[in-house]
Length: 55
View 1 (cartoon, rainbow, N blue to C red):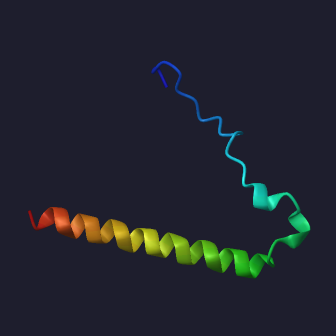
View 2 (cartoon, helix red, strand yellow):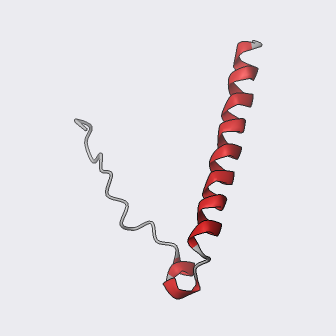
View 3 (cartoon, rainbow, N blue to C red):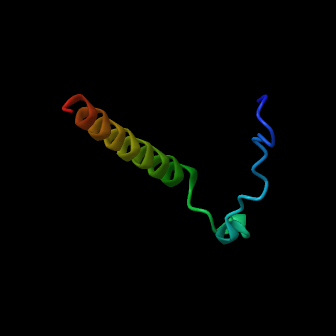
């Protein structure tokens, strides 16, 4: 955090599609989507790691 202009304030990252929170899917659907995205990201990282080990 000693770096100049380092900030974790991300208030400006706003998804305009979330203006109406009543339109959100049910929590169980949201949690499964999050799990799916995290598992896909982990698989991608594993692919990169495997590729780096092969070099």
